[in-house]
Image (cartoon, rainbow, N blue to C red):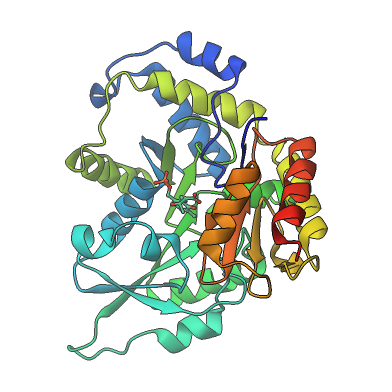
Amino acid sequence: MPLIDLRSDTVTRPTPGMRRAMVEAEVGDDVFGEDPTANRLQELVAELLGAEAALFVPSGTMGNQISIHCLTQPGDEIICEAGAHFLHYEAGATAVLSGVQARPLTGNNGAITVEQIEAALRGESYYFPRSRLIALENTHNLAGGTIFPLAEIERIRRLANQRGLAMHLDGARLWNACAASGIAPQEYARHFDSVSVSFSKGLGAPIGSAVAGSREFIAKARRFRKMLGGGMRQVGVIAAAAIYALAHHRARLAEDHANARRFAEALHGRHGVAADLATVQTNIVVIDIARTKLGVAAACDELKKKGVLVVPFGATTLRAVTHLDVSAADIDRAVTIFHKVFAP
Ligand code: TLP
């Protein structure tokens, strides 16, 4: 039996249709701006996000870091939620590449409020860092794939306008938020100066993200992408996979969300395992095993031996992510394996 890989939605392999699109992609040198497929993808993303322009980048990490770099100056401060991806999983890049520091605020399911942000804004004194950027994440990975409420984003944007702050959205899984909430991508995106979206997570493309914003922002982003070594050449081969993914794999995210819920409901409350069902809003399930006989590392090992891969997520938690390569039948098999591993 093949392993059921729930470590991340990044583990998917291109489908036959996607591979065909990649093979047939028209290509050119993208550093000259001449790759027709990359150009088409950028136009498509800009249109979907209601932005003036977009730029293809190799990874979500580069998308976040380029955005942060282009919207800040050294000595600035970024207000974000304490579990933000860029804070924990991007190798400290904001400090190294942009010389900025973060002001993390503890949110509720990954969402921070306008009141919290207002209270965290710095005054005018010369010895304070400059409050400059508000960075939000939707869906929020560490909080378990939770959706950031649009009404709060609108309030935060009003504050940002009053106080001259920029806003960045880490929308690596914005497509999941949209599929689950029924809210169109541009309804979220229009409140931000920069948005980073991924094609290589739930959408199932092998590589790639994009950043979107104003033409001026994208011109700066292109320059910094080059500086980071992210100017690629015949990139249409992978841009084609992203175009295919946007066309064919967005609506089906609802299946991943149904599978995540099915998984969480079947696990919760059995053999000491807990999954906070309120946070299972999209394709991520955070599983708390504090009240079971196993620690996190031992649990991952035992699950792997029996055929399920998950990752350690916190001191007592595991993360499981549903995706394109996991069926409802796989989920049922994974549930049976969990029950066997945690049974007393
Ligand atoms: N997340 C990965 C790991 O890095 C944790 C995962 O398996 O979930 N923003 C968010 C919200 C992300 O979840 C990720 C990747 C990124 C940015 C970075 O994207 P990549 O991996 O393309 O650099």
